Length: 251
Image 1 (cartoon, helix red, strand yellow):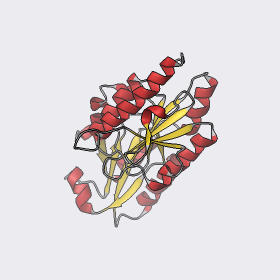
Image 2 (cartoon, rainbow, N blue to C red):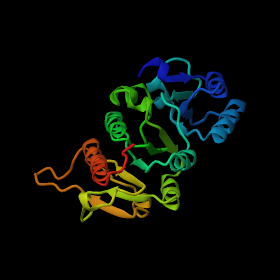
Image 3 (tube, rainbow, N blue to C red):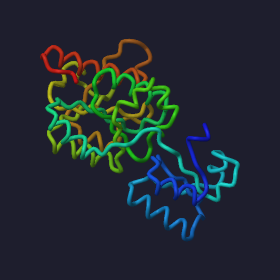
């Protein structure tokens, strides 16, 4: 990890937040207390920043320098608010196309997905606050710079975000290997959000329950599953294909 991807020490982290630096998440030593801890929690609540209590060994793996129980990972992108992105797309007359990534933690998969998403005209990627990749320099690199152009919305409650999209007229389509409907039979010519889950556990039950349609990509070999980055690419280009066939603007 490059040094510019994190900062450490209570005062340094507080000053970075107060100066408007983009912070991805904050790690606090389990027994870190006092005035600085209260200040950090207050700032985190105000700015919706994830805070995790961790053993000191976790902090020592990040840096062996005098972190004083506090390490903050810096974000390489500016996160967007979903409740701002959604109305803005409608106001611009765009046929919305969002991608929801539930539990994608591998930075290479995330970067590859975002690279394809930008090429397909996806309007924004939605990720959860916890249990998701850190959008740092490695993510930017593996996305081939796509994350400089593709809005990322980080939501505290992913199920709540999906409900918000449904309430605003989106069709929520889950890609699941357990579904019986072929992915080409879904209708993606309407405002749509494609949901992709982690390879090991899939889409979380709370999010899956909210999806309007569950589709699968057919498999004919012995492996039985695709890498999530490849599967996401297949899904996104089906959206592009249908919209081109319907003479809709892709972006």
